[in-house]
Amino acid sequence: MPSSVASLDSTASDDSYDEEEYRLAQQEWEESLEQLQQLVSIVLLPFFGKWLGRRWSHWAYARYLRVGLGKSFFLGERVLLAASQ
Image 1 (cartoon, rainbow, N blue to C red):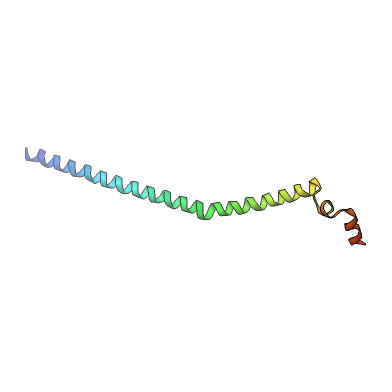
Image 2: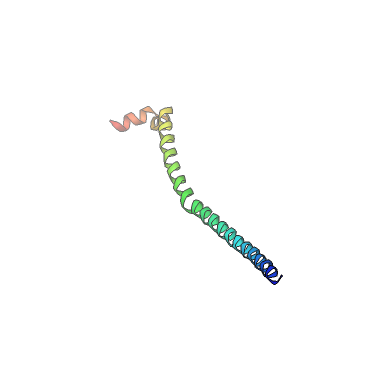
């Protein structure tokens, strides 16, 4: 009978060890997620924002010229012809 009581005690201690191990694993997982969020917000978002901004500006400028809103639209043809002569 004493051996059965000892086996119950070891099982109870194993359960508490598993709970502690689970708690530590959960804590490490949450820390890893926090680090990943920081990586995205500090490194990746500014990088992609810069890249998209540059692509958008090239597209917008080409569109701006294609629509006809260049210098002649604002300054007029006569001013540009006079300046070039």
